[in-house]
Image (cartoon, rainbow, N blue to C red):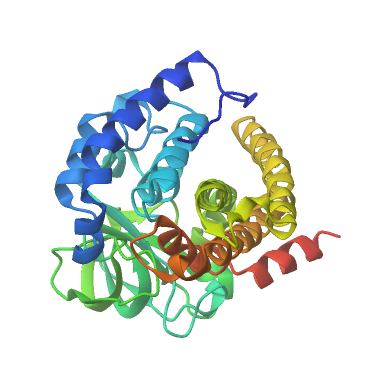
Length: 380
């Protein structure tokens, strides 16, 4: 079990919420891990039960059906879900997609979708990445041309988390093809619109229970009221909300690194070689001591970043640095933990195999480590 009792950022109300989350996860998630992996998606039933338990979209104001809590409650849930082995899927709704509605959407869109996102009745994906545009959003080719009171959207997206389950898709489009980043808009596309279709559920190296899809827009018509905020302001909205997205990824990376370390310590205490427990070898102890020190530093840094974010002070550069450092450290932790398991670590029956394969993509999505370095470097 993850021990966060010494964290300075949490109080009694967070401890109560954590216990609620732990009980829910033990009942509704842990027994179904294998089923979710094999299905390639978390079940719709899990989403609605999470909504009933009050575990979705904690930042949504009460007037739209949410509890109106700050990011620390998101963080508690992220910690517990990640430590239990969930891929980044439910957290995308609470941490990444719902804030765009809260911060920028019209009253009509908020009233229509936020209560359903809180309840788990509606699942929202965000479609940024395209076959030819990843970290560089200025390269987006999907277009939304204005025709009377409608947008007509054409293009394709790929690697979209929640793509198979999504009821609505926050779609990054070019509304002015000649304006670069100043011509990008965010538009809500309902999944039942004619011309919208999903490709296959992509066969990934890891994060198997996270449904990740290709999406296609063949002259999809949506009303102009589906625009999030103002036309051609989408890039600014994306930049403004990226710190929370990257902080969320940094946090899940830190938690997964901790779980990998815990699995390694448990294994080397029990496994014997040459007549003694593997932990009795100096190489094992020194390797784990190095990792424990990095985890200690990492938890303090994560708490600092969450504290700054709740206060509205976390900068894009600080969030990028956090995303970079914690995901790189996670990979180091998971790889070391698997190595210390020996051949057992390569067997899917051991939890470390899951945490190792799920770790790799966190250095890519949300902005690659290379892009994170560039973001930090530009601020020097």
